[in-house]
Length: 124
Length: 463
Image (cartoon, rainbow over all chains, first blue to last red; front, side):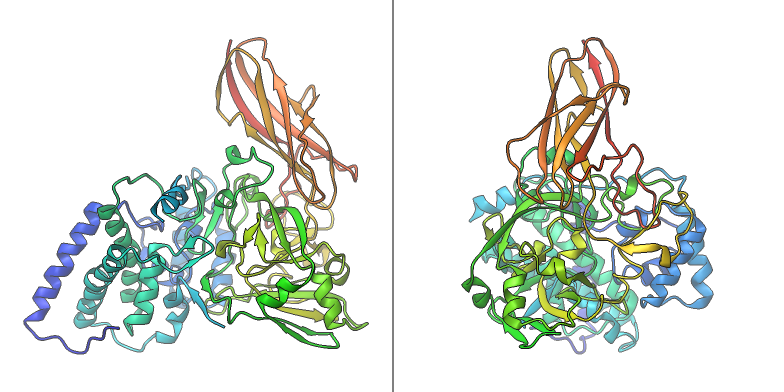
């Protein structure tokens, strides 16, 4: 168990440096996050804040829906607890229906590693 | 009951909202937790070769460990953006550590126990079986599809797990896993298919997980029959439906995944409380320590991580009964809405076949080729599978595989020797014991359920 309360003023730059170094290492060595990314756009951050709390972006980016269907989806998610400020609703629907409309090419889903179970067995 | 979720931080997130303002210090704090503490702890776990919490050979994913450690060890109160940063970075870090320690990195997302499956969603986990894997009568667990509506438990403590039977019964029961192991065992070989399988092939497109062809598999499920325990509880005359509820973690205000099946189906002796899959304790991805198996019916009728059986005097209500999992009474025009009163709850699967080989787009040399696949029909038996190699003008009878069982799919194959070079459209269609024939076009419906049009691949032959 670890707990943080206050940082010594000198510790801050050290921590930041550590963070940066490790971030660099992750960027170099990691293949990528297993979760999908949302594309750039005016409401990207709003969509991330609102939608990705409960599910990953891949559930969104694989859809190919028109504006009416996206409106239904957004309103359903609001009923289910998505925290959408009423003033952001239209921008969010625009973002989704622009990026994930029926005329976009199909989303190419990745696969799980082919031999993770074999590796698991050989380790034990 | 002890249950853990990979995304417990996510689940609890709403409770933390507004607890602490985002500030520079929070940023540093998050950086520290994410990039220093979490990787170090992960590294320590890895270096010690401590097997991460396992259930039936299913080992927690690195992300599970990281998120669980963050959730349990950090006492973190985060703002929304800070949380998202942590979550996405936490997902990144095990990748880095894994790569550093792994000497044989291969491509793809690592989900121990699930090999080469199509990732429709990582959170919540939805995995599809590629059709080329469908060459065995029994689908091995590492190739079996996974469908979750919500947060899946990563660990369930079998010792504290209980299954209650309540409602319209004379004697409510609370059963342990040991209780379930006492009575006679019923084994059912069942083809489990998600109602939304093939949704991506619907036109116009409909919302939902965009399954290709492979949200289907065939496995042996065993455990006591549901009937045997309902009889011990003594169902009352008022009993009409039996409702299942499992341990799915429900986020925000999302309606719980609760559905019911009619009492006749529950009492027919073939519906089981399955504790085993393919002869081993049921893996966590598939509902450990026990799940309902409602054979021949849409997958949603077979509740995973089962903990509550409630006998009702009417069908269950709620989102996953209405408007969820309903089908138009009569086919409408594609793209047009269907009134709720003109729909019925999904029950048994329909008649369907898939081509496992050759693959779509395959280039074939001269000679004889085996066209093969699977066919199933829910509660009915497959009586015939036909193959066309000319786009549907002429149909040839395929040979059915030796292995068969009620509720189980049937393998089929057809030997084909193309006479000349060219591009060929190969089709398959199944017929069942109820006289149903797989149609050329599936019934379009607003949620894309029960897609069962002829299966089709295009191949290029060079003689």
